[in-house]
Image (cartoon, rainbow, N blue to C red):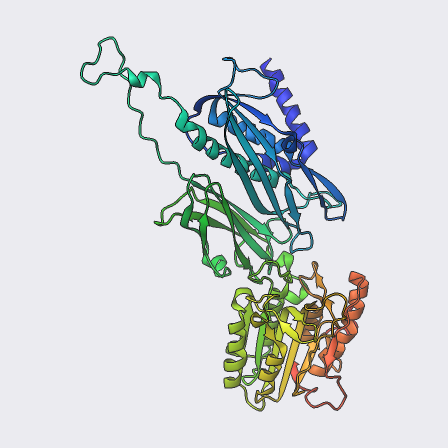
Length: 620
């Protein structure tokens, strides 16, 4: 018989795996649990769940633009009934009968319309989602007289992963629903205890003890041991990477998401979340300690540590420790460990990511590069470019090895180090103090730009905001700063997305303005007009930057003299990018060189790199 039970359990588990998938199974055993708020209240409670809750559902559009029904009620109902069993001595539901007859309290719970928001056009295949549940719990005594009512509200934000199917259309929503239901049920437990526990009569034995003349027949009631204070805070740490395979690749952006829940009956303030681990990993994060702020009773707070991994990770495995600390700096909950696995460099790098060896005898101490790459923004609603940070890092490496620029002549600003003040300092202080009339200055920007209704172009720094022009960097200010430099040639390179802002939909937005008034700066812009310049999941670079790198390493050297000039690079990019966009992406992308070049244009023969390798003249 025991063997048969084991077989039946095994068959049931296999059926469950087949029906919901390993990811769903894993989530069911690893999500939040209801907190232990103390011994059950000695009452018999009858739970009545209104159809507005038990049948609650909503809809959402999946990754394949199909409408999906999202059944919410059954999970919330099950969690609330479980919470009631954990809170009261005896619980009945319609169809069952309490052993002692009439219940002491009847609780009716109904739900308002649930709200589910899913942003499917954001970064990663883990789409940002928000689920809000609003319910009302009504309490009645044994005679049916109302004891009170308590509103219940729970909102949770989470990034949803696509199901691991061939179509990758639907999102895994069950874990989000389960956690939000747990938050709602936790609030129900707290409200029920506050309302009903004070009315609980003391145990009879507690009133029979006579302190002066204890009866020899009476059994002394031992004093209840002091309850160990229950930590009101719990948390869950989750590692998110861009492609969802939990293998960290060169230049990939990762997020450590920490969801903190206050299971207590009072608000919690001044707690912090701290990240520790190998220094080579921690230095990629702009901050390793984040404050949770005030968390109300039964509330939650979600925090994220964001970092872009270096181009060539030196580790293959590492661990990050996440700790939740209270106001006194003590652990508020057991720490959690997140394992990191890094993709071996040799198995990942595209050919352009094999940084060429430094060219001997090609040092150019008078030339300068400012490389800016933004793969993340402080405001997460700004959709960042996945490989922009890696693009800037690789361009900087090429100009050092093949361009002969000393390390001190290269300023690399990535993600959180590319604040507007950082960009201003480089343009207004660093470059003017360094350049001479013989200098070549290259400013490379990979990220986002915004164009207002008048056509004025603004670069978006890490601390930028689409709704605040003062937090953007006007291109005309960059042009003015570059125009004042004492330089022989200034080159501005932009690879990114050009967004519209300020057009009301009825008025045609003016085309982006890239040229400044001085006309002394040469512009290489990845795309024409508005829209997104393409990025390749295979090459791990923007399409424009990918061919820029190939050109710099020698493929643009048409006359094979060992030098790549501005004229050769611009011709190479104009020839390669449009064709690759059509053949590889089935889309259009046409770079633009401004002002329009003429054969006799001054500065076109300026040398950018001196590669040591030669390539066939017509690579795809």
